[in-house]
Image (cartoon, rainbow over the protein chains, first blue to last red):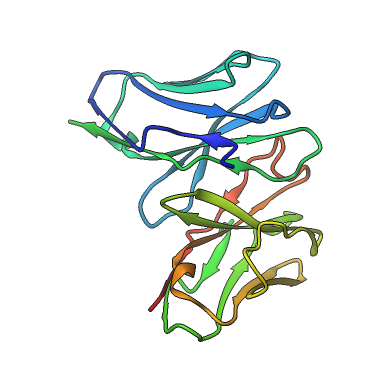
Length: 112
Length: 116
């Protein structure tokens, strides 16, 4: 029933190392994907997105990779910093739709 | 810009009581969304509006839930009667132009609802 899945509820990484967060989707109509970051007691904030016409999008320390054939995307954070500790949500949408489908989130802890 | 404003931040109520959550979207945004966050299902879309008109309410759990948007600057989500399983964090979000597609959502800080 969940069209966007984040199978790892949590991830711990040492400061300075790479964090890799994964996301899978089931709906082949999805063609726009986003990552949101959420700190405690705050709403999610937009981090980075990718269209299905690309397989990679980079913004500073954050890179999103899309593998359409596998219906899989990942978020890479390099280098990881303690301030990156948050819950990361993967989301997807399709052309002509005006809503987003979210995953259950992955809690990232960056250890100083 | 003040961002999306939700009230109250916390609500504790007893089962059977009516609960009303409020949202003020960002000025100029013509899409408004209500989401619910739970551990099991993550962020679920409940309903969204375009230009104050409800477009898709298929995510509303049951008839106990209702949402209105009387004008461009205000929306409410009402639960009557409330039940313990409604306990969750409820988020309001707004966006400009194309809705969620190709246009990031701006979320409020949420209302944490606890029904005892």
